Image (spheres, rainbow, N blue to C red):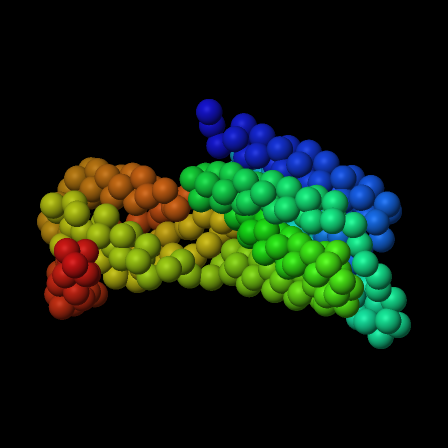
Length: 304
């Protein structure tokens, strides 16, 4: 199954699951009045909202290249992730407000043990969604799905915190219910910040990790006729990486020979999973634009 179908399917599954959890938690909250469960219902409602946006965003990002977007639509995906972060942060603020208000007003009361059952079931469901989204996001290079996975991971922890609060309230310590809501809020806010930090680099053209840069240079130097490389520039274009570099070859080669080497190097670099496109300039090695110790360093790092 291709990437387009997989990421769309994962987005739809997450949407349906979050909507179901929001409805269940909201219904039980109306019956029990648990603030911890109310915070979880708000969180799941926000999850359902951003999941709908993620589904729409993933549909757009998986459209094939066209005349106006010759490199495809993948650059939209970090914006989708930032929308996820905005929804997560808004939910965190709302949950914190409800917890602080209840504590200041002293407005808390014992809750039904059934709340603990609902929260426990929600934690199990969120853990399953976390594993599902993370695997798909990493396997198919989707920052939006990785963002959704991180949100679900935090939801597991916050559901457990809410579970402790509801359990405490059920056995005679009702103040634990709004305190748990505040713990939930902190976890939600931290997740929002984490998602923003991960995706800003995609939008501003940040450099990829150094180990990927080493792989790029190693791919270029693996060609037997390439004797050096310099001016290596790799940067994110959306969630994928574009690369430009110069390679050095014997200066007395024919244009056709140099062209064949350039094509082979481009194909080797494009074969790296994280790389979208590569641009290679061929220099005669006699110009001395590279240093032998630089090549040796890259080769040593590749062996290590």
